[in-house]
Length: 172
Image 1 (cartoon, rainbow, N blue to C red):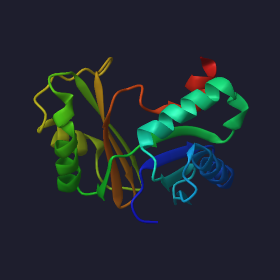
Image 2: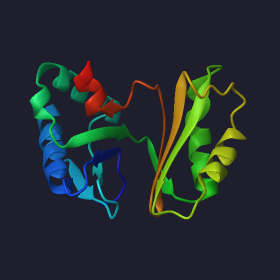
Image 3: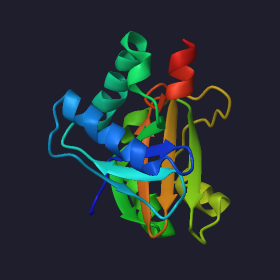
């Protein structure tokens, strides 16, 4: 699979069930052509949908509110805006391209890396050097999310509530 715009996590050894579940849910939301691939990382899938990934997150939250049993294997879904090679300069450029919407609000950089030799602090320093806004680690207005999976990195600039966590949503 080429580019992706969703990162889906599940329990170890439940990847196939989560793959079927995300494809069924994306079909239900209106994308019959969506693709999902199990990665080399245990419990992690990537998916490509024609739908807006933020709308998918909203749809999952609404679905769990109305029918919580419909989401059994998916634990988290993270939207991805840009996919770039997992190289510091590429990640920095992608983040710089997306951070214009932050305006003067506070932000936090979150890096999750899997199967990558890159150091999280190196990624954070490369991105932070491009943003003049105030950092707020506890209650940021924006998240600069960098998800590194092997040789590729997914980069997003989102509000903290624009991620899906089945556990959090089911507790509500």
